[in-house]
Amino acid sequence: MKHQSSIFRAKQLSKAFTSTLTSVFEKVDSRKVTATTVHHLFSPIIERHSKDSSRPGSVQDDFDSSIPAEAPTEYYIIQENRYPALRALRSDADLGDGIWRCCQCRHENVITHYKGALPFKHLVCNGCGEILCSQCHSSEILSPLPYGMIQAPRPGLDREVRYFHICTTCGLSHRAEMEGTTLDFYGVKCADCGSSSYGDWPRYHIGNNEPYRRDPDASFVKLIDARADDAARTTFRWIIANDDRPSSRLSCRNMDDTQNCSEGIARSALTRPHQ
Image (cartoon, rainbow, N blue to C red):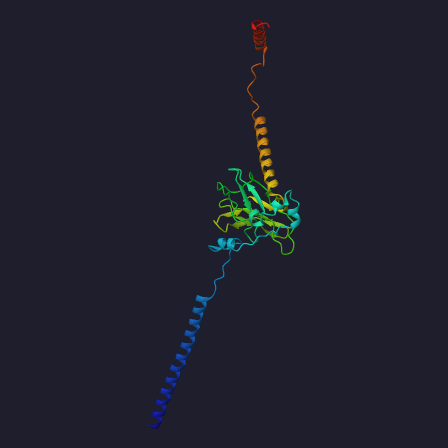
């Protein structure tokens, strides 16, 4: 009996020990699964964004926190104006860095260069809502860039690339990126409307704002003169292309016309009263 009871007790101990180990392993496994699940739920998801993608509302956030990129106007620049006292009354915030004149409604739009990826915000006419194009005229701060020009010197230390392109859908300006000395205008997604660029957006170079800051009125007159020159050039090309001008009444192209002209001149001379 003692031997049987010892065997029975050993079986009970073995069963209890096995169940205890099993419960321990189950708890450990459940902890591992739970930890993995929690890690999967709360770990950040790494996504690969395009170079110009943005979250909703980030464009307006950039606008609200934008900082002017150009330095304040130096005193000597104001003194070079013909009327420096009057020029000093106009602040940089009022003048901006330049103007562009819409080719559709002739409205003058003041523009300011800002730091960051959106250098001029939306280049849309305040008069008619048209987007800046190659037919519009602007001061020295903007210069159209041919599509074939993709090589440019790298900017200095802590300076941004002075090239950009404009979304043809909403007019938002996007600063170009640079690899070495090569400008990159491809594969850009508009941060506002979501349109994609395949290198076909209008490109511009960011120039100097000193001539405009020195004499804004003179810059405006230059835009008027440039528009007049374009109109004269267009008219001249139209005349050359349409050379079928109406002939004059006194022109005689053949013998019959010559005879008729002579007879008409003689008749008018005979019927003219003598003085």
